[in-house]
Length: 278
Image (cartoon, rainbow, N blue to C red; front, top):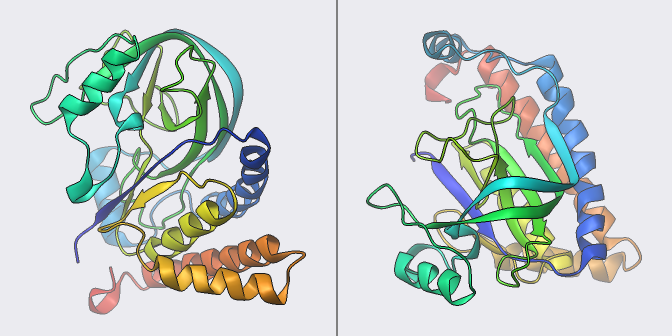
């Protein structure tokens, strides 16, 4: 199967729930950071060659960020952060532009034929956690981040409390060429480019987040909520067995599965992906 771009969107008006989610995500971020510390560059020869050809340096320094800060300047906000639905249910670009305009926000058309419009702000607050997800191949630098950062204090109910991915020049990402070079900060809808590794883990993580923290969360990886019924049944079973700490128990299992998958893919990379393992 080819690679897939997982997408999620939603809003969280409950600051206590979002703070609690951030505390959990920081634990995952530290586990993830440990793997990057040991393997800052690709392991397999084929990925090493690709990185040298592209001039991609090893990932060093911080691999995750915690936001809780006001931002001022020219803030470009992609209309995708408010778009409803994915796949066949995806809201049209025209509908996104109309809702932005009706809310009193300026609307700027997309420069690319199939792009989406954007709006701008002069101030906002960003709060939450994002991390660069470990992969010993490091296939998609700049599109390998798990973001649960909330946008607030925008002056617009349409944008407040929406999930965003923060794109700015620096170690974590490069602002796409299509975006305005005069922007001080660009806010996109969160995405994560995957190829086999972490796909099922991400499905379960998203289901857990919706179960405990974000009723409004929407998620897509080839389809809406893959295996959601299976995960929901597991969560309910854990809650029956361990009503006092069901959330902790599920998260601990998620962290175990994350480390197992990282270790498995490291071993494959060290074998240079023999027999088509990549």
